[in-house]
Length: 72
Image 1 (cartoon, rainbow, N blue to C red):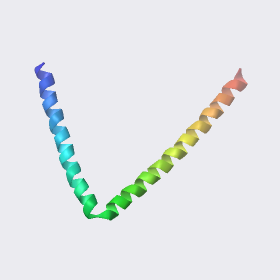
Image 2 (cartoon, rainbow, N blue to C red):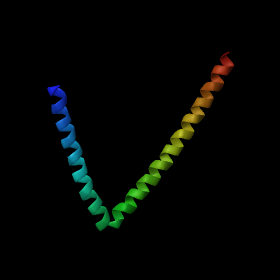
Image 3 (cartoon, one colour):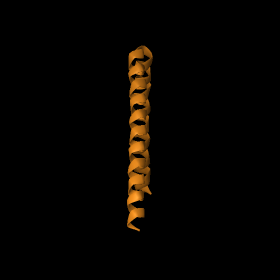
Image 4 (tube, rainbow, N blue to C red):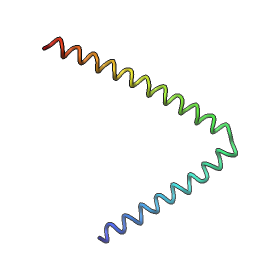
């Protein structure tokens, strides 16, 4: 039980540090709109990459399905 209590304290400290860092990041975003624009572009590019990867995965899945159907 003592091990769990120690880990709980460390996890709480970690979450507090993350929240503290996010507070300053949010301030920087409000002070510098260019950062927010860059983040929006990064999100858009990530979405496009995600879409392309899903299409590629779907194509590979279909190709494997066709290959298995032809073997049977």
